[in-house]
Amino acid sequence: MADTVREIERKYEADNDTQLPDLAGIGPVAAVAEAGTEDLDALYYDTTGLSLAADGITLRRRTGGRDAGWHLKLPVAPGVRDEVRAPLSDVPPPELTALVRSRALDQELVPVVRLRTRRTVRVLRDAAGTPLAEVAEDAVHAWPAAGAVGAGESGAGRAGARWREIEVELLGEGDTGLLDEIGRALAAAGVRPASVASKLERALAETGQGRDGAAAPHTAGPDGRRADGSGKAAAKAKSRAKSKGKGKAAAKGKGKAAGAGKKGPTAGDVVLRYAHEQVRAIIELEPAVRRDLPDSVHQMRVATRRLRSAFRSYTKVLDRAVTRPIGVELKWLAAELGVERDREVLTGRLQEALAGVPGTLRLGPVDARLRIWSERRRAGARDQLLAVLDGPRHLSLLKSLHAFLEEPPLRKAAGRPAPEVVAGAVLKDYRRLARRTEAALAAPAGRERDEALHGARKAAKRTRYAAEAARPALGRPAKKFAKRTKRVQQLLGDHQDSVVARATLRELATQAQRAGEGGFTFGLLYGREEALAADRERALPDLWRKVSRRKHRAALRP
Image (tube, rainbow, N blue to C red; front, side):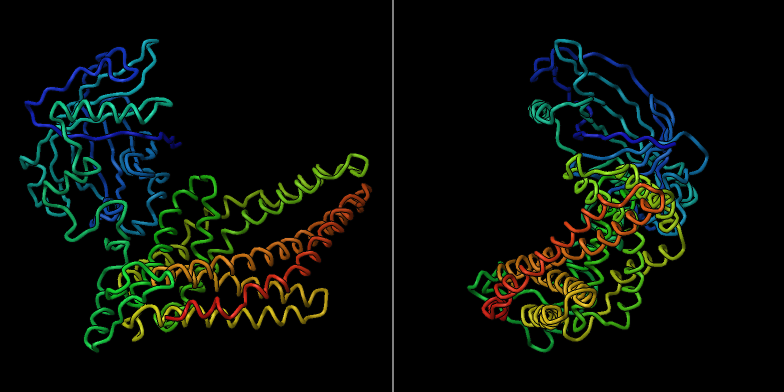
């Protein structure tokens, strides 16, 4: 069973003759206690292409010290990592390898670096004796693991690299301000902030195993390219534009994208940047979903929808022959992610509605009936989702996403100036939204209008996502356009949630009636949901008049 520890620390490096200062008296530190010396032996694992290291992730098997075992470190923020631990075993444990599957895919994890460390530990305590932080002074010896890339047959026998490193880690609920104060004291003594984020990163560099041209951790994509949309394909798009003598300066005025007056980005730059962000979100959120972290399922589902929407909106930039099959799989994944999420949201909505019903109108065991309904649908949902993430279909999708980033299927328009291309895509989606909204307003009340409004909601979401993607090229007008469209989406979303809630309330009332409990309270809630939906329908025409003003669309045109 894996355990997780949140690690908040600062790393430093120092020359061998640099003396560490006495840290007693720094902030609340009243005493410094010697905690002994440890000899640590760690073997770091990665793919042969160092896919984990490219994302600032480390997987190691370590013996010696107080926490011998397998350690997987996942970056959370600069200086903050989650360390997921598992007991010692001969091979990487499945509960940890599953958490790196979105990066490693089906590649084998092999030893890449071996580190031996002599660690001297000191604990900083306050006046009450409470541990505040731990200072670890490390003498590190690193060399390529036998069989690692660049190690050669005698890699394990090399002299390797040596350095001195100091780690300061908060203990308990410590204040990061203490780390700042300690950092200033160390700097005054000649200790420098570490130039890299981890021992592995330095070991790879100093043993000649670094990825040529790889991006720094926390910014690299699955292919090692920068998250700003640069890379082979974007460069090709720029080259096309240059060869044709095209390329306009970013539009001035109207709050257009920053850098007005200079040559702006190409359509390929803008669309690939947005697509890259969504792919990164899917890849980075997968381990969070596996760990059942709050809101991770919802955020991963949103990223799949945004990416699929971008594929459908920017067909002049991205070849649909390539993106359409990926889009089909993204739709499937979003649906699988939505099973538990939709149940959770609907249950919360109905529980809140029940809480607002006076006791005199709560007839029968309505809370228990709702709880039973919800738990039956929850049973097995998480196991089903984990099975999806472990399955071959999801692995195939991940490979497709990596391949998309490696060689994006750019069309000719990708090399054109971004404003004219992305504005056209947003306005095309808007026209689709307008047709659906007007059709919904004209539809007869009842199921036909409900379905038409649901279609308009999806069109509003697609238009909003297209405008969000266009923001780097169109600036403030795109931001405002997305915000207005979001208001339409939210109103129609409330309506659709009411449609779904009413269907569930009818189901609950039927179950209660069959059990002899009576369905009065569920019928009462049904009526309230019906009134809410009618209110949203009445509000739509006025909101649409405001959102659909011609001046809003004119502001998007370059």
